[in-house]
Length: 67
Image 1: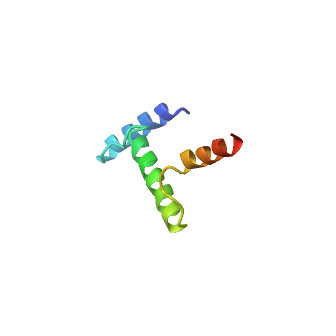
Image 2 (image 1 turned 90 degrees about the vertical axis):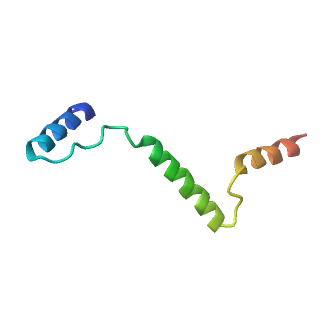
Image 3 (image 1 turned 45 degrees about the horizontal axis):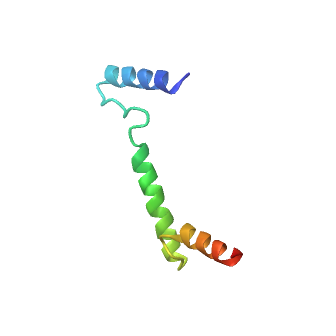
């Protein structure tokens, strides 16, 4: 059963029971991505690492050493 078929079945069941329809698949994807990013930044701060620019700094150090 695909995601779309499951969503349609859940919507039908909710309608039969007088309940609100479930959110559509993918409706909260960006919210999940934002929360994951915020959690990653929070963990970096707790570990006393720079929260932003870590990849750019690492690349800069790597490029500086090869010259």
